[in-house]
Image (cartoon, rainbow, N blue to C red; front, side, top):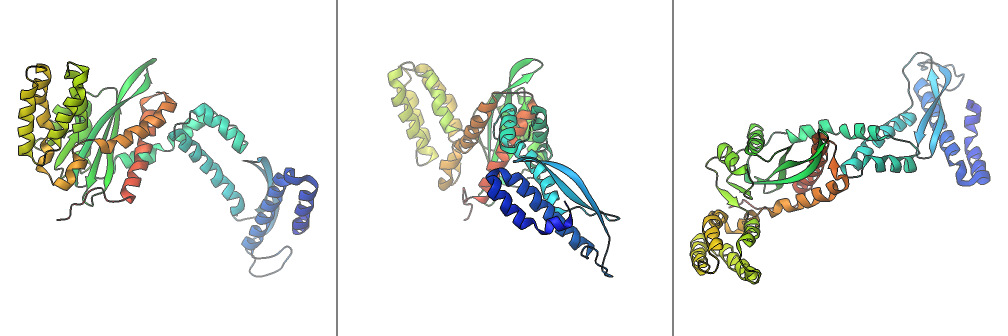
Length: 386
């Protein structure tokens, strides 16, 4: 297409739409982009066609075809050339940026739990581009650097530290195995919640927990006044080794659930739940311990195993009474992490079985990073004033 043809484009576009309707849209896009590139080259040269001027910085040198995949299919554009400079039109560079954005969008779709096969099918339908599962996985891996930086960012002082673990299925050496996903969240000096870290490994053993907790301190975590968690296997020894001396609050919600295993008769469940709730809702530690003693005595004969369990375990749920009354409701359980687990479960259910630990860590890290950013920009969770 010559320059003169470019100059008459508006009428050409109108006629094309009249004659061909929406089928003319790809050609219209081609014409408009070509026109924009032509105008860009003229601005770059600082001279019109055949114009003699001392401001001219270079000379036009024809056109070079370039085919670009778009949502409307493949379109071949005429890219203007210059003789000496490194001119390249922004109008087409935006197409290149769109191509990179498409890859990131694919990665985001993968992060949101869409399988690679579905991503490929959706991309082909919406974008007119056939993308292989391998390309989708490669696009997802572009997130790794960002997520690694987030997982290893410096930490500061966090008054309350919440710890939890969940399991996901991963294919390892031809077998499907359960990996432990360790998650740490905290409340910072401003009273905002924040996800502090995540780790994925084939075991929830003490060595995994210890390595994870040590990584938090190495990143600068300090000033922790209370650790809130369930009684996870391996966590107790790791917590004592890394955070020795810091009080521990065992999740009251999980204690309520654990008690169900020691109730001898089904009809006793509501009564036992009410008695435990009364202990946890006591106004102070002294009253809670008094109610606990009465409850243990109450069940000594009709549910001796339950009574022993209560006496040994329920005191671990009373540490919260040493902290401000206005904080207790939010630091007596790990409910703060329940939203995280629900969201993770919703997304990972689509994937079902991860191809490796790295893909599991990538997806869960991206979800946690997103939620953590929402927390930090949201309202204050706890107030430390006064």
